[in-house]
Length: 137
Image (cartoon, rainbow, N blue to C red; front, top):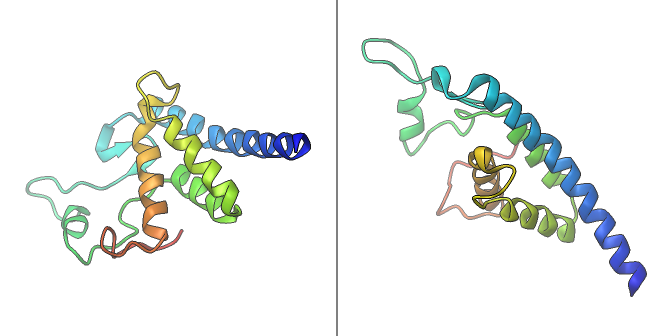
């Protein structure tokens, strides 16, 4: 039993270390890019300005929006990691992300990334009522 617990803890640590790499990269992106020009860390959405053509806001607001209108390299990395994990590891992955959604977390300034990744995981589990346009990364 003790060996099983040690193996489980070692796996959890490996998963959390991989997650931390992406979250730390997002922190760097947020520090470099902030919220300038429609961006938010590694996220970038072209926002349509009054009098200009283009932008993604109309697509995002429609029911039939393009699920790829919002992109983030760091979110894609985390979602690909999640897809490679077995059931128990996926639970650890979600638990780690949820544990970082607190005011005193080292990653509180990039909580938007955590929320986004968790929402995409919920969508991937087949909840078509919440997100009918989900596309796996």
